[in-house]
Image (cartoon, rainbow, N blue to C red; front, side, top):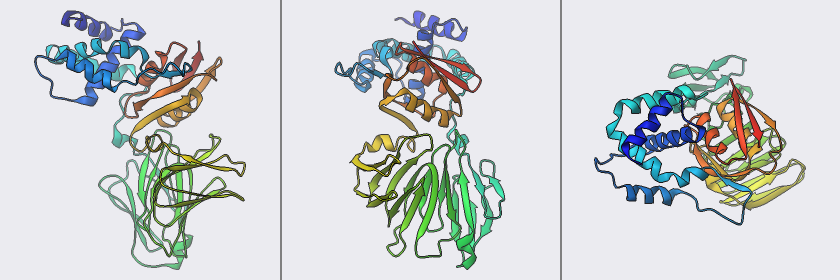
Amino acid sequence: MDNKTAKELIDKYLAGQCTPEEEALVETWYNQLSDKQEAMPGQPDYEARNRQISAGLPPPDPTTPAIRRLWPRIAAAASIIICIGIGLFFLTQPNLQKLKVQIAKNDIISENNKSENNKAVLTLANGQRIVLTGARNGRLAAEGGTAITKTMDGQISYNAQAASSAGAAAFNTISTPRGGQYQVVLPDGSHVWLNAASSIRFPAAFTGNDREVQITGEAYFEVAHNKAKPFRVRSNGQTVEVVGTHFNVSAYSDEKCIYTTLLEGSVKVRSKTKTAIIRPGQVAINNLNDEITVKQADIDEAMAWKNGMFMFNNEDIASIMRKVSRWYDVDIDYKGDISNIYIDGNYSRSKSLKSLLRNIELMDNVKFKINERRVTIIAK
């Protein structure tokens, strides 16, 4: 494709005259260009670029026909995307800026700003609610001899100033909405990352013989080591007990299982009557019927949300859309039989919802209809 043809395609996009496939090609090129932000030479090496893109694309697996790759037809057009991207990077700078504006305008949710996703509400023991998104940096409150501070990087930190018997009863809760995430440093120095639509309840000071918190949704923990005070995480009838370790707990109420994935240290997972000890690289799957199964974990997949990614590994579309609903704050409807639709692929959570849905639509067996903040999945 020459520069004239490439320019015509982008002009069609800006005029709103592209087919869905052409729109997906242009938006995929733009997203790749935004991610790379490389210093591009005036005379591009198209063959090298083609090899680079091809190397990053997953090979087709003929033994799993039910699994659909996230970028199926874009792979076939990789060289076209690269020609458009590199050829027009220098030749059409004004169009590049217009393209950026148009993509944002077309999307139900434009490219997310990471700082804008740091949304949460802090509820103090006395019932006072502090919206952390717009709260000033510095000291916010004090409870149980502990100062509650919002740091320069936007996280909440609890700093014990004096031991207090009242501190054990002063429970705080940090909750994230759909589309939000947050970080908190607990009174013992443990770090917690909350995913969207999640919460953590904890004392303003750990004064007893153990450290116990309660969560809903999903959270990643880096627990400060203290052999004398075990750390416990309670969620939906399950208890995770550690001394000092790194682990992730996914306990959303709309999921069938609780997943506890261990990265470092040792973890004991208990249900009503069953107990399992997992090692680094393993996941304990609690099916909420008092059964716990221990398997080898896909650490990258378990930690994808914390690293700003969606990672779909032969995942059914309904499970994927539950994640999409939490992150993009949309409601989901279904039309038709979607039970046999599975997807492999990775996607940045900083990218737009519309772009993600368009890439899934390239599978040819599903399409989406967006009406304000409601997404309908239509099986073909």
